[in-house]
Image 1 (cartoon, rainbow, N blue to C red):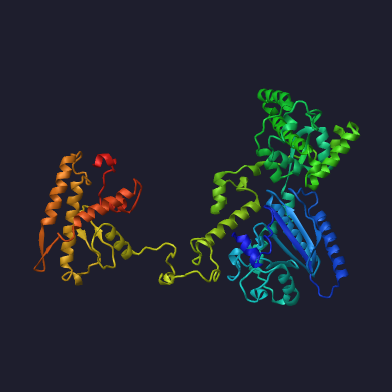
Image 2 (image 1 turned 90 degrees about the vertical axis):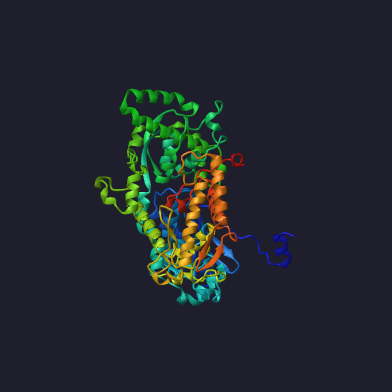
Length: 614
């Protein structure tokens, strides 16, 4: 039985969770006034909707939305009545922040208005302020806890969920605001971080627009003059084109809506995102544009001054192709701007050429010859690096650094946040950890042993490392507070952990380790590891190994007047065996055995094929 069947049988399945589409922001507007009756509530919500429309028309007049604009509809959910809106912003993230700006301004107009806004990432306002959020607030429990009211950001505390660390339902959040609005959390630090991107509004609306001179058919120039917002779905159709969408341009039998006839050069209004999308695309001219492009390229080759003409023609060709693709099924698209374009095109084709503007008419259009600078498209790596490092002044002042002022501010904020994360001693290997986020996690108290000025993320225990290396190399374990260091000539061993006071007691251990080092050297020489003989013969190496092993095993020594034999533990053999196996496991890469021997002045030979070892 699968998981769904189990949930159904237990009566616990309440439906799949609702999830927003990618690149979509949703907003809910509530009038929370206990004194209002149901009829008055509907009237107040309608007033909010009209005020929102007027605010958008005034603040964002002439703004080109990437996909959807700012709009609402009345929603009823159980006992809740409110306005719901959703805006698909596509690749234009600034559309999302423009929505937040309009919502915040709207709450200042209505004292009883409460707004919740979220996207496919969840409570993105809290994500912006993650660095200063209360430690009890985690992504697992933040649903429906962030609200905008009277231009401020409020957070519903844990008491809204009866002290439990769980997400809130929309009904629970609304009821808590109605009953305990004075208990909501308002932090100026959280609010400043969450609304940081709104500081550049409303000026950002104007700065996001780009005008460029392009050469397009007169018919298209008229449509763009009548409905400038139609450029958004047309650029998207071009940007996301496929072979099916290209058929109107490649099929010789089909009549096109925008043939390259009666071309004119006018200024077209884009957003910077739309202009970049159109400019960046590599697109070969369709057959109907080929002859015109051949003439333009020939003139550009003969006359450098004609290069701008070719660039404007190329942009016009791309734009006309986008509108051609859009016109095939614009009336069926789930896009208001596309449907408006379809109706305008239909009326134009019915009325004929008599409604098209003349050159004199177009000269009277606003900004008809405006051609904005495109340098914002250029990204200089050195400028980018200087902005990240805060060294803007090292570059030429006339260049103004990387990007505009808002871009520089965003970059500096990214760097400052990253630096604060790196300096956050409570941050773990997986990121900034919230206190008490996971109560079941096993937390060790080892970090408390380190001093405040020590990096807790990277520490080195010399004693543990020495013990590990000795075990790996087959040496007996020695209790010491310091690591064993072998001198570079590999003939003597120095034991820093043995103090002068302990020299008499540990003399036998010192002598034992010296002999082990000498045996290690003899063993490695027998294998040719030290390369003392430039080209050792295989037979001699095998013989040396045999002689060394027999000599080492038969040798006896006196320690404190007692005889001891090494026949019981073949230390020199284990040492060489473990060392060579460790080095072989590195597969030619850097590793502990190779690094340690390298510091000792030793270099092991490269591993040969298995057949040669036999």
